[in-house]
Length: 216
Ligand code: AMP
Image 1 (tube, rainbow, N blue to C red):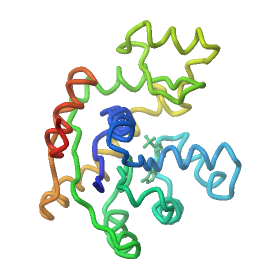
Image 2: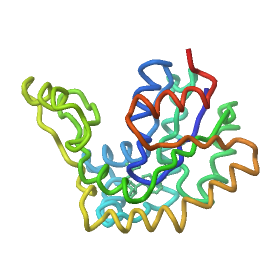
Image 3: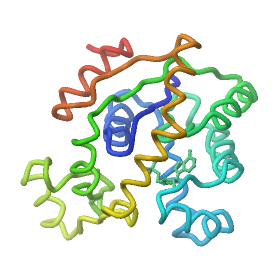
């Protein structure tokens, strides 16, 4: 399947995408991850993107579209993919059509992970990635055994640079002002599926697979 994940920062897009990838063989394409990688490697795109990312603002469409074009052109995406964090505004959504047409593909569904704003902040400030496995964890919500397993194996729990109180409000505002308009946009195209993103990870995953017709 070819899916877009919509939802505010902290809605669980990355977590749910990682599980769909593990269980259904779809590739997770996260523009946030692609951009963080470009920043780490110090590429020209990364150097241009860094200040915007640190401020919680959107990186310019041309940089993001170039990364998406390149990533979706890779052969592993032919088995299906989840776009996580892209598109983020109307211009990106409109540019996605021709990119997909160019590789002979079309979207099957757009999932909106709906979460109350109050819960989002706790999810975002608690979010950590295990440096060894890349697994997404949360110091407030993950089982202690999972957090300990990472550190016991010699890993560290890494916090994203933009997951801090100062940046979060801006990221949520950008979502409301620029990304949320994609909900009616995809609804009109008949692609939108709403999934309640509250509750535990397993609970959300089971709603998600039901909504996508993938439930066992
Ligand atoms: P994320 O990991 O999806 O929360 O993205 C982290 C940051 O990367 C965002 O706050 C933006 O600065 C940037 N970013 C990620 N995806 C996009 C996109 N589709 N368009 C513009 N900026 C993006």
